[in-house]
Length: 256
Length: 238
Image (tube, rainbow over all chains, first blue to last red; front, side, top):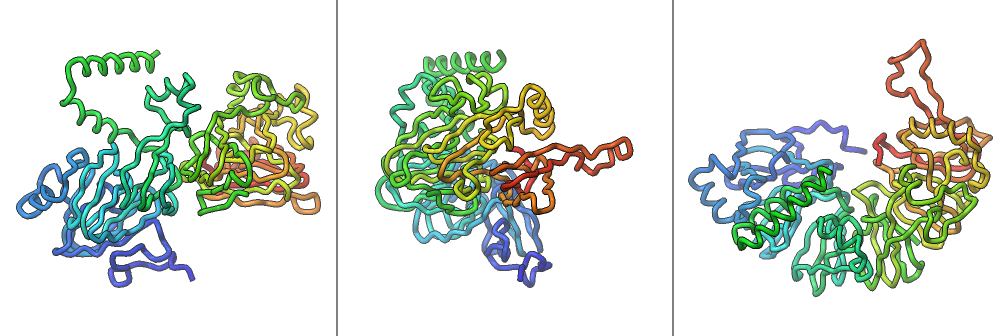
């Protein structure tokens, strides 16, 4: 009845599919002709001979060329590794549901924290929406989500924390609830960058598909920090001073 | 009224059902013209407090009691989806369980705005509609119990005809409590809430005989009366 009691071996593990009856893990069939980009720490077990190489150092020859060509998201270089070799690779992520998507000459934008692995035939680009990555091309990728993914058609407004990604539709714009924005408390909250309420949504229009999950607590703000850091070189002196002032102000608030 | 989309998400068409109150930050996405506004739970100083419900006055009091979650009311026309941090949801039809449910505010995901929510003392539990209160001694006793169970001194009571959506880590299941059946004992950390006329008593199984050897099940919550107890499949706090 349940396959949860099955003892798995390279013989009966699936090929590029979820482990039967277990949405939380996925088995990739790795072979020398097909390396994968993989989120750091997503590997939970593997059979065979495999090498996991960080993108930031240790890459050589063809692999380096592949990364240079396909991975144009410098902010996220440290978050991914290349898995190459031969065998069965099982991955998992925080007990989240894992889904495989086949992209055919398409483009899909996904929250960076939810992108688990993808084939190098796809090219990865930083989305203009902070914290999101755009995948373009033809190939397979794996995404994790807190609970099953819900596919919604625009027009729809989505809570930023619940948004997994979107495909074939224009990038979203911000929507603010008028009544909320007018209140002073929220204005202060927005300045602090804390938007846990319903006052701000992503507004999707046009045609396409929006991917939504049950909202998750954002694990860490490292991508936000990196996004801000990436913007800093282009700023003027007065702009930098303003930010410096604001940061100092907030730091004293936190301490006080 | 509420529809379960999957184990972690509910949807509601507020154009048909009327306004819905939900925990702040629980809205996932919506279609249509919907307006979200901060909502004040009854029992506070503002927004139609309900005197005599065993409620304590003022926001400060509620914050002290730990029984405070900001809520938002959704009004307008459209379909709204709710979920919270990927925690499993459970829909309770109050009409089927005696019209009242008591849960911690942090476990309350959403309910129809036509329902009445108030903060009541744990001491008035099982008093039927929370009317009587429990006197000073009752309050003190339950305060002690509340600290141990992590429930606090106060709990949120929702009553009226309609549905309430509650959160339970790992999923919620219902256990029937009735005088005709054997008593039900629940792990305090797995206890989510209760509906109907249920009294909860905290019991310690620690004695001089087995100090430190209780295997972590030292505290148990005994449920008696008539109603339903909601238990989550985990000991995780929200």
